[in-house]
Amino acid sequence: TSNNGIGTAGLCPSGQTMIIRVASLQPDASILISGLSVINGISHAANNGAKVINLSLVFDVPTTPNPCFFKADGITRQVLSPCSLYDAVLDATLKGAVVVAAAGNDGQDVANVNFGGNAFARAPATLSILRGVISVGAITPEGNKAGFSNFNPKFVQLAAPGNLIKVPTQLTQPAGNPELDAMFSAAHVSHKI
Image (cartoon, rainbow, N blue to C red):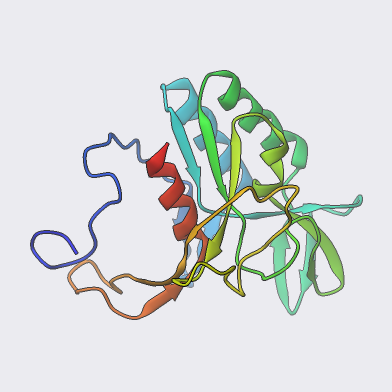
């Protein structure tokens, strides 16, 4: 926890952070992260001198030609154009940024995640084929691959703590229930670069 015992302390308290909002709270209390907002966020960070861009999020990218939206388990999912995200990430790396991408929390091959019979790759983790992009999976406190963490040795190069991380449920509370999330793993790697 931080010095006041409330919330959590950052992984790199002496580092500089550029906060770029790419998510929005919807009227039904769900959170929407659009592909366009992420692409714009990556471009904004790169154009303003970011050295490390942490992408603790995942998008479905079709492994075969598919419509932009599909329905699985009653949920409509947006499919991101792989070219537009690729272009934004490539541009960021060419400007000198290192992009750290979470592998995701499906417990599946990051290059072939299955939702409702539809196969998708998880981006930006699969963009680790680009120089300057690091994809990060999650490990347990014992150093084993976390069961929920996506994997594929061609794309996921590193693993970091992401299992049983204690976080507050609200900023005014001390650390609460342990969380299971590869997104924490990307943050661990981002602060070490």
